[in-house]
Structures are given as structure tokens and as C-alpha cells.
Amino acid sequence: MAYLCLALGLVFLVEGLVWALAPSFLERMLAMLRDLPLPARRQAGLLGMVTGAMLLWLANALGL
Picture (cartoon, helix red, strand yellow):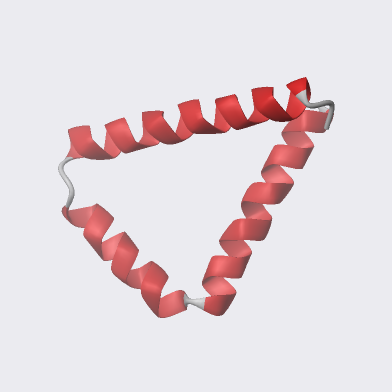
């Protein structure tokens, strides 16, 4: 449960930083994502999930 709270906290921290520091960049990125076909968005989502799981595993293996 602690890892879930840590992971969600880090996601909110990074998301908040992006919205605070570069809102126009984020709006352009969202427009680009909207233009991607649905299978490409799903593939990007799966890639993000796998990357996140690997990072959490690495943090656990390093004892963080």
C-alpha cells in the first residue's frame, strides 16, 4: 500500500509541475494525442504501464 501511495504521489507531483510550468506545451501534446488513432493510444498506455511497473520493481530491488 505504501508503494501505491508513493507512486500516485509522484504522478500527481509530476503532472502538477507540467501544468504549472508549461501549460501551453501540455495543451499541444494533448492535441497531438487526440489525433493519434485509438490503437496507438492504447499501445502508448501499455508501454507507460510496463515502464512504470519496471521502475517500481527497480525501486523495490534497490530498497527504496
